Length: 327
Image 1 (spheres, rainbow, N blue to C red):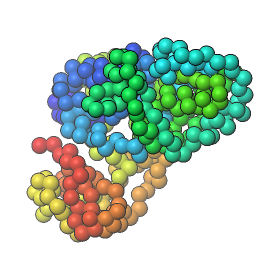
Image 2: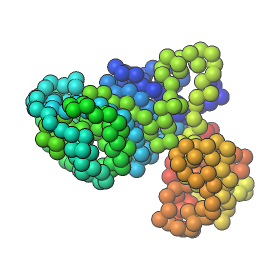
Image 3: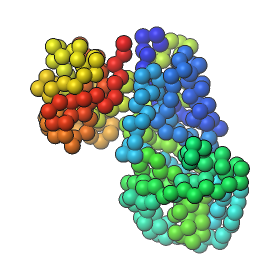
């Protein structure tokens, strides 16, 4: 592990662990206090938790609302709880007479940009305090609706008062709240029974490992096999290389003229990652990312192959958005 100081490990979080618990365990395994994650999972939820360490922790803030996430969840119709999941206190039990077609129609009404009120039992902070802390004190705090995007809801199973749905959505979406709101649209109410996060961006359950598996790999000195390099977290962004004469300026995070940058061909790993994300294997000419100030940021590398960070163009020069270069 000594030779790899930054990166990401895709954890398959098990039920009963908080995201904080996972990070605590990973600090011990990795031997560093610099550990974070890209998005909280409820204690009873399972699945993909992207754990960052070293300089990669600075990437957490970049996993914003446009980051796509995919979940599979169990929806229990006819039951409303204070936590919006099965672990909470039952507030209402209502009769259910819902068909699959009814459920499909209700789900269709939540596709696209929607307004969602964060649940009281959540880690979202209001006035510096987490909502669940207020809830445990018996307080209900006014919450402003937030815009989230639901790209797809697929009904995987349906049996009268129970459904399993697959949801593709933006970061910041509460699946518990989505199920609760679908239940209200149906008139019978609903709460979440179980939840698994299947993917975050390009990180999927197929490449995730349980804490036990990670401990075994660490004991065998094989952690490097499952570490995702920092730059691969942004494999969907075009990559450019700074001319060797501008190495010192790039290392210092100085502004660089777009004329000193050249597009770097995709590596085999990037081609695979793009294919997994459903993106074209060949990227094409991305020079317009350097000349158009409205373009997203790009990855910048030194001529020796080292990843510097993410840079943003104003049309004439590029400036640092986030630096990840190892010293």
